[in-house]
Length: 158
Image (cartoon, rainbow, N blue to C red; front, side):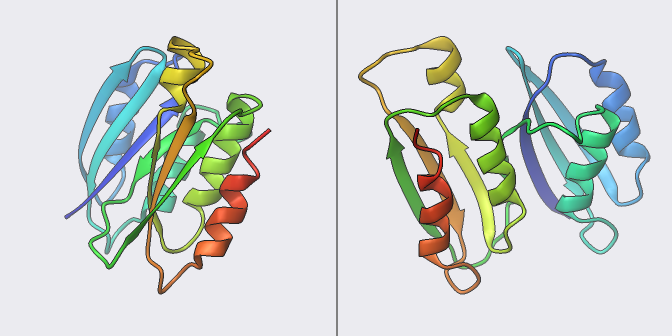
């Protein structure tokens, strides 16, 4: 069994219905739903012979009727391959849409396994002017080039 975690900007659903729906999908064996303020964190155990992280993400967004919106703030595909860490500090990010669009672009790139940041806390909770946004990307350097990651993340800076 594999594990997949995702954090979504979502506050308009019945979590039990989403959990029930995901558990009805072939290959998903466990779903933990954690409500964090206006964010939804899902931790999912699945059989990668039957379903993929990409399909799970699609199913979640389709169920929530959010396919046309960028709402992913973090994810972790929990791959156990060789990885490196790319970290970047960013002075300003335009808005949550720009941030989430970048995270979704990273999600879809082969070789990117995890993205985490302080975006939500800094942007919505502690608007400390002196603190920079910090983003961390775990990636496989044999699959994706550092320069590609750098280009995508640098596009975040306003």
